[in-house]
Length: 124
Image (tube, rainbow, N blue to C red; front, side):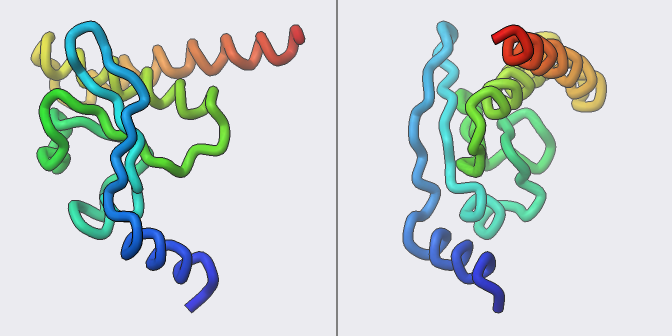
């Protein structure tokens, strides 16, 4: 077993889900950072970077929460993915959109934010 797999097994065994509140939206939705390795080991190996209750296969996430993997090293990267999950969840919950079109719309919003961050870095 390589060191990375050993570390992931250690992290999963010793820290559990380890939910940490990042922030709360005005509508009460809570955005949490979670141990992604634990989510993959316990709930579904399909869990990648983030998710919400309205995505098929992610019903283990409470309806009023968005979970983000704790793997991010870059805050801008994490924030862009948070925006994606919030937008996608909103479209699926409130606009009754199916996953694929909601995901596509969320990806557009995410790209706009990433482009904005890139431009800010280039101008600083």
